[in-house]
Image (tube, rainbow, N blue to C red):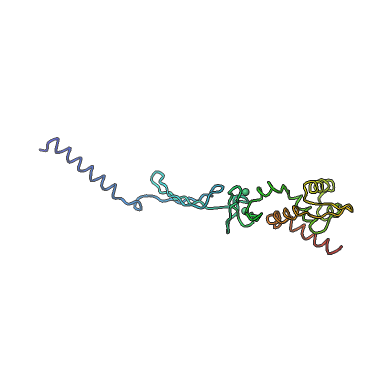
Length: 200
Ligand SMILES: [Zn+2]
Ligand SMILES: [Zn+2]
């Protein structure tokens, strides 16, 4: 007949064995692994994180997408001003730094419509009527844009009405064309400018 003390010792021995068995199970034997893919947040770089959620080992891969256009990044650069990750199409070389369009607009507040007018003036189409014909921008809007460009120092007007880009205007043109130049409506306009210039 076993005493109470013996029975307790026996139970303790069983528990210890069970504990040892539990501890000896390697993670790969019974743990479910799961892989998740997330898009890294703004300014965040690619990363891989392993964490345990209940019985699962979760590997979370954060992949990088362009913080500006949300497209895939082949060659990444970071905006010097705001830290956004930028793809090739969204990064702008400006005064020896790489920046995004949003930060370029802090320096040169140029909208797409305004850029179109700069593009035409840069190509020697300077009459408001001609610019309207080539771009389709209504004449009263065109007049407002031209006034803005002159008042902001992007364009000078001679007393004969001829317009040309100032150094500031040329800088704004080259900087903005890095991003806007590839857009369909700009390529379109480029084609019409070429056609117009070759006719005149
Ligand atoms: Zn992009
Ligand atoms: Zn930026």
